[in-house]
Image 1 (tube, rainbow, N blue to C red):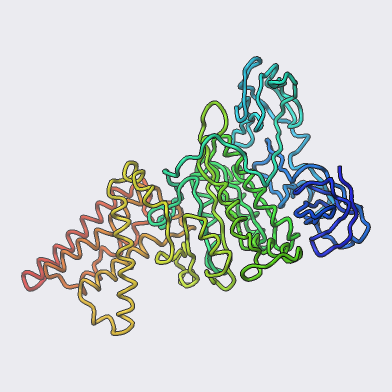
Image 2 (tube, one colour):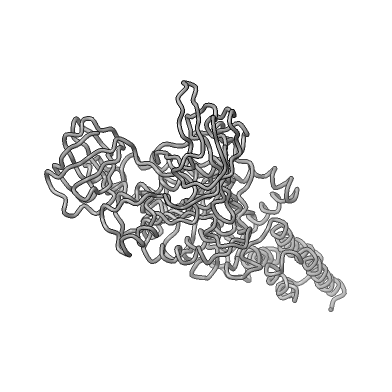
Length: 592
């Protein structure tokens, strides 16, 4: 165990000498208050340490002691429903122990050592197990069954195991490895946050992550195990989109990382999430959620670690065979922490002062997402979908963090402040967003939703793109210069925007839309365009088409309950046919 002395303090960066025996990324205790830090650079016997707590009061000559182990998280029952800081210190237990204000040097175990869990053994004495095999289960919350797995890089024969009531550190059995050594097995394991957990095989993303948000599911889908980013300026609705994804996506587990966001925004999350009702179970959404809160007024170095803490916890639940959604809000604040530490290390700055390795660090995070065959003999499949919010200053999407993120992720949901100001939510700009999973997911939609799903979504995008071109003409020469067909395109596009894309997060029937209702609504909105076009070709007046009484019913169709939508949409189609036929007959006969 290496011991050294401080020679320099610069904000969260501490330089210590006499650390020749220490290793990169070792956790250290700094000063008399034993502040937690991590070695991020070594030159000779000098170590550069990023301290995860306020460094005021530290000075030359203060002791630094290495623990000899890297920054790791505790993995076991008790993670779910918990609220941690960036280095997995439980905030609720800290408040109960030391009060509302966090005191420096506080060390509280991430998992409660006194709580009793009911362990149900699935393996028996004499069974041979290897890394990832499940040897028992614990009911962690009302909706999550925690699977107790053999740790990575461990294998052998179980010599004894028994169901019963245990603390997480109590031995539940014994394992004899191939060398003959016998070790206790318990409900808990540890894993270094900067190292990805192993798996058997990575699978291609060929199944969508169902979100219930029509613009996302139909036009810019994300695959289960995929990566996405949500960049947008202040007030453009990032938090609303993230809440909707956390509540409605078909992920089994949600890991929400509040990385450097303002304290009041994180407070809203902490207050709102327990109140949100999980549509799958009817219980609180917190029953399947882990929150990591590291706000902008907390130490900047811990902000950098929070992303890795979140993705490691997600990998642990992925290894159980669960689908996990990791929502990082925001990676811009995380990148700012990198920039600050890089500047204090006196490294050569890159664009806008960010370190040259910004892109590679972002890639290390996003590449830990994916759908995999987990380690273990049962070949279970788990997935991590990584969704990162980006907060570019002034909404400038050309800044380095946004551009570096776009080079890595496959889905880009571009939030638009102008849409948000018009109260159009989700405020995702359909002209600047994209999804590279759309073609790959086409066969799944054709097989599981409708054969013409892709064709209809492409028609929607064609009309929206055409609307953008026509609006330029209208601004130059006015609406009267357009033909009847072009005016119909504008009206149909307005219907797509207002009646299909726009969603009300507070309206129960509209907040979540399953695929069968999305397809039926999409068909209804496009039918208005195709049938009106035929009516115009038969001589109907465009002025009368745009004010048809059925337009109001189409506008309210999205609030129809999903169990009634097919029947009611068929009625609206019949009404539409009758009203358009009347216009056509009137045109042919000379009068209505």
